[in-house]
Image 1 (cartoon, rainbow, N blue to C red):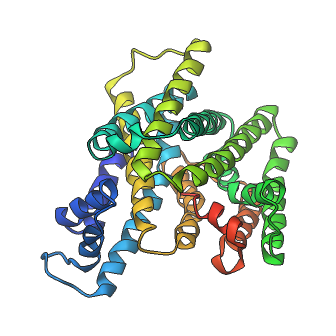
Image 2 (cartoon, one colour):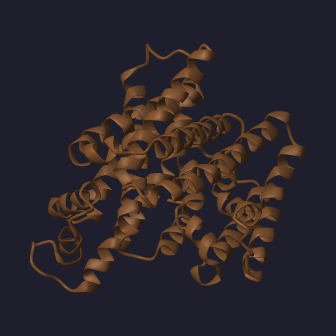
Length: 359
């Protein structure tokens, strides 16, 4: 199945999961206008015929939307690899992904959140720029890593960022993690070490790819910590649009500085750029941010443990990439460690708040 066909299949699957256009419109209305709680109540009580249904069925739709979100997020590495194999530079991929996503979200943000954005304090504006800087570093380094290492290794290393959130919270927030969180962190870091060990044992390019993926994970930690502080005062759209815009500007400057070509791409390549902006960025992360209003945040974090698994399966399907023994064993340790860390009953208050922002 070619990656472009996968985009079409993903879109049709989203329609099947969400049942009817009415459900989709209600979900997006709740995302764009979160101040209207009656929309969320409608989502949880409307069935395919538009009549009042049971709460259980509404909750089932929420979990179906979560499954769609995880699938959408997992598709990112497939589309990126397709572009890189066609000769598109990683920073160009990152730039157009974030630019198109910014433009698509800017219209509703300006319509519904214009005044809130205008009222942003100087401190919050500066934090949004710094947040965009680390988001640019995340995408630039992670997407670059896919040139050197298999999708499964790259996604697993980037997904290990909750482990580093624990370390950062202990160092900078004076948080004392529980014994289970410590055990999960040690286990996850051991798994990360196994995956890195394959790079040491192999080619230098593989080690470079591993390091780039780790930089992607570490920059995500800073992005999340800043995001947690700003999101306590700012709505979702008023936060992501300025942060995405700053990220796009920084990626543009980075790509130009390295002499990357920004024009002359084929229609298929532009379709992949658009697909990256819509499917994993907006459809994936925004739907998960909507779902977090209806289920525990830790449930979203746990669901995202499926991303490395789904991405690895898609890599095998599209590119015949079979994970090595290092990746399978190390990845298993990473996922178990992350699960122990993000389990709600194990986390201290501040650490839990930081981990809950991982979507």
